[in-house]
Image 1 (tube, helix red, strand yellow):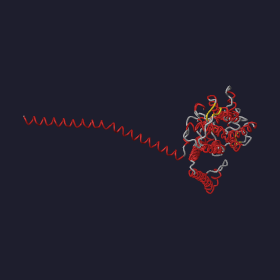
Image 2 (image 1 turned 30 degrees about the horizontal axis):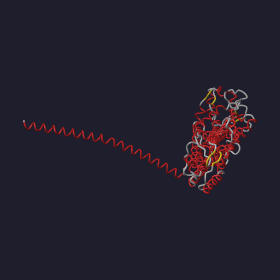
Image 3 (image 1 turned 45 degrees about the horizontal axis):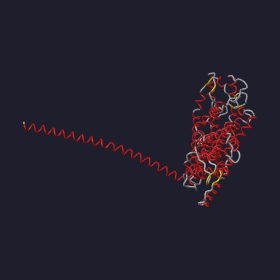
Length: 505
């Protein structure tokens, strides 16, 4: 009887847990627990290293990665817990014949669906339909002349896709930050040379120089764009592909920042400040915001056969990346134009004036949001490609035509390289040309001290407000007490008068 039960449980190629050998269950669980503990310990050790090296921004980014992993685990848990409910939802078969990512070669009838289910395939493509666990739900829907809302196989593949997407996004964001940070660290030699010049010059006399003789003006303005807005933007577009930032750009923007925000500290280390702000921004870039998940859902909705959505959507991050790079280069050109148009000669060093007016909607922060979307979109493209190849094969209909595959991969690689070596370094320095500085201008200990000071001031204000309210309540209480005393005195006086009159009588 036990053999018959085990054989019945194994129908459809699946063994239920109650008939699975305990050593298999224990071995699989042990492997999953060991892998999870290893990953958790590695992340914990990495966090301790970052704390020991006072890398608080990177530690915060690591915490953000842990939050994303927890969110992924919760999504996976929801899909697992509610997979029976999802499979139990039955819909008419005609609803499944519209908005398909792959075109069905023949219309699937109920009999064909039953044949495909028993054979383990769906349609003519030879694709596996179910893992076996959904046989009850399929039989339940077939008995009603309907089909399940989502098969067990589809839920399983959705699990894998979400995991691959999140891991790819975190990995590519970290890669971009590492490559971009390496490019920015090459500017340290410029900072060191400037510091040496400041120390060596001392109180050198300030010479008058014609504005056109400054290297920054010759490279960035020199008449380009003075009469033609189109020429100015075209020059900014081309500039992002070669020498996006040179030493004269760095020196001039550094001096403009220090003159505006740190006028009393000419030796301010601008390079360290940029590195700190970039590390702080990494926390934003590595996360997956709600609007990014909304984009994924919209793409999954529009990935319809014949629309070639997967191909056309590849150009979105490329266009945005080129627009962001052009805008950042144009901000530098605008800084040069302002100085060149307002001055014919300058005494001393060339100083530019940072302002939020140079950025879209007067908000430099928008640039970071766009870079965040670009990196996620590019990671989404590559994650979707790897998922399709490993799940359905290179010849899957979801991959579309072969001629569309190579351009997508080339564009994805180009976006990764351009964003790492050009756009991200441009963002790190150009967004400092806003009207306000970022909190990275202070060291970690100074930031903590300022925050503690602000909290103490807030508590003092709250306590002072309470005391003032209490002080305002004191006079009213005194008045009420005086009224009560006067009332008691009048009552006593009346009592004495009554007693005296009684004695007289």
